[in-house]
Length: 493
Ligand code: GLN
Image 1: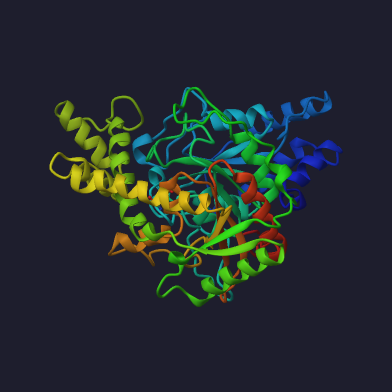
Image 2 (image 1 turned 90 degrees about the vertical axis):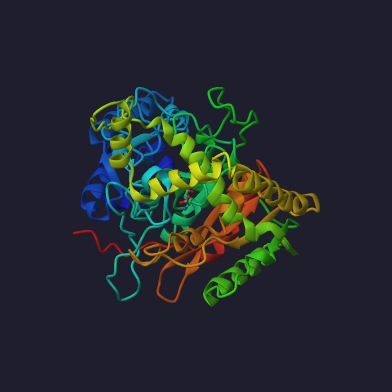
């Protein structure tokens, strides 16, 4: 039934409505595909029984004529979203066998709308990383390979499992979270669509916190339309999250196919990096041509503080992480390593429970927040953040509707290729994405082409606050022009 797993969400929705197949069949097709693709390590927990039960209930609602907008759609959930009664670990040893007694707001809304849980997906530990190499459960393998080569490649991170699951047809869609690029970068590396909505659009309640002022949930899908469909269900005001925005959620799908004529698209000159691969530059140029052909107007803009975004992010994010991760002390959740006394137990638990990258972030965060360095680092970074946000605001005030940039500085790389001796090498992956989190804006990555090695590359569109709709309209123009991309199914028996 592999044709069922190749459907889009929109296509599956129509097929279910017309009774071409049942939600149970759709779930089963995905469960077998997942079993066949265990080599990718995309899922850290499969939930076949729950999937079948949810699909059965969906079929009953379809038969009774009260189907929800996502009725019977099988989804993968990043293991950062708490799922009631289903193990949630943030892919960290410290959350070993943690089974939440509550459901995150975002996933609760997906189930409310009829979606079916296939399982929990792999990610970097506490979402810290760009390659999925920091997961306690091991790497995810990118379904894509270079032409004529078998070298395993990273799927990007931190939401690598969700991205790989969608790219390999192991789910019709998936959830991710994006603190500095963790949806858009893996989307670009796997040829999928990923959107980080405006900060406050999706509730953070029940999502394991990394850096609370930057974290946002968003969807992975194979088409822009599907991203619009999923985001609508994930969005909305939640009184349980004080930073959740009380703004109406539009029917994002209505933006698909809407004319982009007359939209002013900013091309920020600071995103043209020295030493950027020529094919990234070419892709960007191609994207500009496509939007122009569709009637958009291109304008050169400047975001002068872009160069400070990455250093400022790597102060703000670890600072917030060190504070958020203080709660993992062996008392309330997951792992406990006994010690001589309470302090010894804390130290042993945290020493064993956190991986190297998480420990590094906790140390950096604690340092930049410490009394002697707070003003020099943390406070300074917050000021820089304000300037980065202002750069965007000024462009938008001058009439720019959205910006077009590359999503990543390269295509997917091999395991161990980056960040071994120097963690900054890995951090540089986020160069085009972190500004968007720092400014709280929406950003979408849309597959736009293949590089000379046959690997997917993405273009990023950055929008005005709460104007995801425009990103969907523009994103679909790119998708129509570029076509869709799927990996060769080398993992299937
Ligand atoms: N790669 C970035 C980091 O490691 C962003 C991760 C994310 O967006 N969660 O912090």
